Structure formats: C-alpha cells, structure tokens
Image (tube, rainbow, N blue to C red; front, side, top):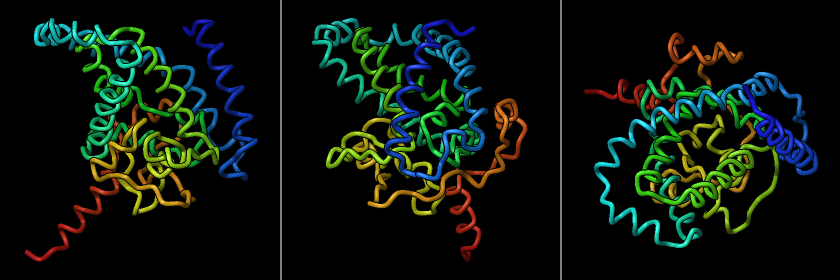
Length: 272
C-alpha cells in the first residue's frame, strides 16, 4: 500500500512538472495525456514498493559479505569527512556504478530484455521516467548503492544524493527545452538524456550516466549534438500494458540491443 507521504510527494512532483512541460515544452505538439500515459501511472503507483523490497534483499544480503571485506579504518576515514564532501563522493561513486550497470544492460542480451521496457518510451516526459522494469531498477540501483553502503558513507550524504538522483531522473526525461549551457558537460540534462532514448542509429548505446556526462566522455560513449532527437523508442516488440511488460523479459522474444544486432549482422556478412 502507498502511504500518505508517497502520495503527497507524487502530487507535488506532478504539480511542478506538468506546468513546466506546458510552459517550456520541447515537443509542443505532445499532450500530457499522450499515448500510454495511464500505463506509466501504474508504474508510478506500483513499482516503488516492489523495488524497495528488492533493494532490501539484494543490498542487505550483499552487505553481509562486504562488512567482512572492508577495513574498519577505511569506513572511519570516510565518516570523518564533512557531509557535503561525502555527498560529492557518493555522487561520483554511485553514478560510476550506475554507468557500468546501465552499459551492461545494453550490452548483454538477457539484461536488455528488461531494459528494453524503459526504451519503449516513444514520447518523453517526467511520467515516462517511471517506466522501468523492477528487475532493471533493482540491479542498477544495487550497483549504485552497494559501494556507498559498503564504504560507510553517512545517511545524510546518501540522502542528499538520493534526492538529487530522484529529481534529476524526472528532469532529464521531461519534455522541456531547458538547457544548462556550458554545464551540459558536467550535469545531465534533457539535452543529454533524450539522446540516450533516441531511435537514431548514431545515438545507439550512448549517454549511459545518470548525473555526470563526464563519465561518458571518459568511457567514449558521449553523444550530444546541438539538435534534439525527433524519434524515440526501440524497434523491439515490447507490449504496451504494465503486466505484459513485466512478463515480457521472461516470455517474449526480446531482440538484442540495436547496436549488438547490427554488429552481429556485420560480422556475419564479413568474408572469412
């Protein structure tokens, strides 16, 4: 069951992003009641509790091992720093974990089955950010938070990062034309993340970071031209309803990521 605080937070978020997308739209023709918006409301209402339970199980189990491996002196050194310095370190460490996990979800065909649900978004907005398969979200967030918890960062620093992550996740998916100027190389924005969702060949398998585009710069996966994408989504046959999308990775014939499929076809066409 959703508690009152969750419902209030959802209402506040909606009251911020719906007017923002109407005042500063990237795609002016797109309506708040765009295709499949009710399906994404279901994700908004139901996914949270499933993901929280999954994270508790995965991170809780892993921490039993990590506690034995991480020296006490290291955790004490981490905790002796100021909260704000810890928050910066958490941001870098967590987004590095996110980048690596996200890249794996594009590179490994079995993981792509789950991640293709998120890439089935054809009209970008704040609500569509919630369309993520629980398995995808649990594993990706675990990759982000496990190193952070293992090193003993303070709960305050982790809370600061969590708030930044939640709001930025909505912002980078939003249907807004807001740009951040020269900071675009440092902070993720719609200009950065919309290209990750673009169904255009040159944008495939690009822009994996959640907050820090510099990680893609270092990893050779940065793509951010001046123009914005005109087409989003995936060519995979992802169904349109919540329960079908949950089952799709297990029963559907999900295709390889577009980049893998093309590479395979190119390899097959080469003379021996």
